[in-house]
Length: 171
Ligand SMILES: [Ca+2]
Ligand SMILES: [Ca+2]
Ligand SMILES: [Ca+2]
Image 1 (cartoon, protein in one colour):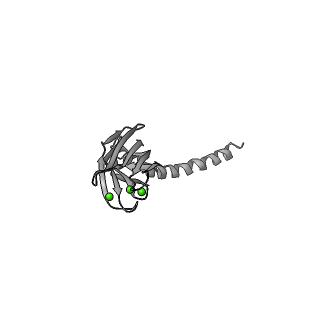
Image 2 (cartoon, helix red, strand yellow; image 1 turned 90 degrees about the vertical axis):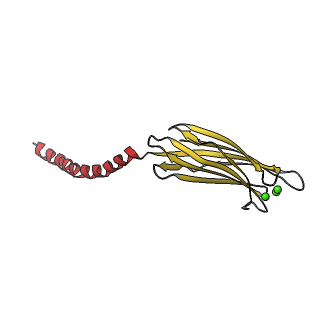
Image 3 (cartoon, protein in one colour; image 1 turned 180 degrees about the vertical axis):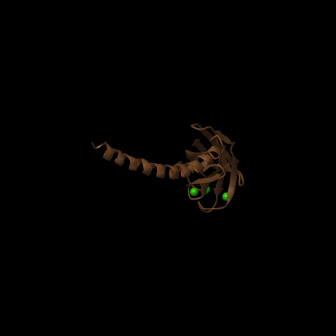
């Protein structure tokens, strides 16, 4: 007896969905088309620094610093440049630079990697006294990679101004 009424309540949701589904599909299709040619992955990681600041008087200053990197979302065609730094002893800043790009298959490439040691009258000095490049990393989806980089004050011949940096990245 109530079949007709029941059917009617069923028909409306069906009609409603029929109207909505094409709209949703219209949004999804371009997104899928984009994904087919443009990969996107998120890179996480951390950096640790062990820095020594040569002191004219008294013992040298040693600083251990650590940083958990903010996740970086990398999409095809939108490379990201990352810069991170740590400071020590009132006179030293050690910067880590690299570039993240992504292949269509989701492989992350870490290129243009370098570590710079600045040493001067403050931790914000622009006096660049040492640079070390580090080898490119290729990170397959789900993989991680690590680089250990040494830098020191080569420009002024002060080997007690130095840093050992460890960079770990995960795709
Ligand atoms: Ca110093
Ligand atoms: Ca100092
Ligand atoms: Ca200097």
